[in-house]
Picture 1 (cartoon, rainbow, N blue to C red):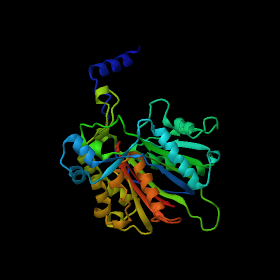
Picture 2 (cartoon, rainbow, N blue to C red):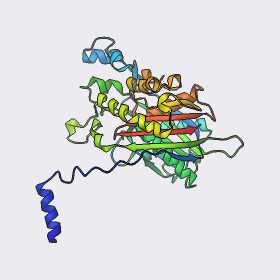
Picture 3 (cartoon, rainbow, N blue to C red):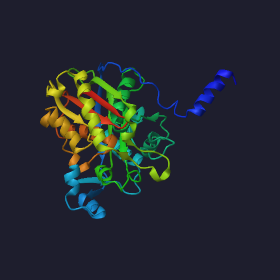
Length: 357
């Protein structure tokens, strides 16, 4: 060992925090990117677990007065998967519905992307398990996962669009599926009552070349601030602390502080209600207070898709695709309409995307 390496090793041994907190990097200028990726969401589907968990059940369990959860969190119910339902299996059921909606079969798919926050297991990732439950194990179709917690679907959509534009793949299946059993701290009523189980999937393909087809991902902005990673975290060790922890008020404050600047960098006037030709806003279904920020503070009103939150709660990575699914199913977003996707997630990360459906 050279004397210099020995000196560095000695310094790190004597100062164990020396390699933990690097000097801050000068912030870059916020920049939204015009991408105009000619891809189309061909179909969407969801799987809703069979068991409804009511506020009254949780209030009786914790000894809270009736109505306390509704007042605190603004939701009425959430769904829980049965014990024998795994997240990959649920994702496969949503994928079947999405393929049916797109008029396709698994034979048409040449890539599967798992875009979920909480895996069934650490190794392998859940993508091969989703493909297995779809009967695709011998299809030679590649599968992998992308992970940006609650923003995973948006990242997967960008990834799929880039692959399609570069002609690496043509028809891509994106699956977000969450089963929270064993991951919630039921000593913390706020976080345990807020979250529910759900699976949502979509099929992405090249925009058809027929006249009038305008589907595209138009513009994107994503940024991450790792300094605040511990505001929403799920440690692996020690085992007795391996449950999700969230500092709700601090997370909401971070969003209050950072989202307006990102929105104005994305499109000037957004924080003043100037949506232009955007027909609906697809926010992450994080919390009632978070939804009120985008609906009231930014003046977006009824264009915000927030109707699913009281029934489903926060469903982690499936929140954004579920809101998109709801907008399409209810006719609030029709072919050729523009939508704005907005969300923040653990990391901490924020995403803004505009797309033409």
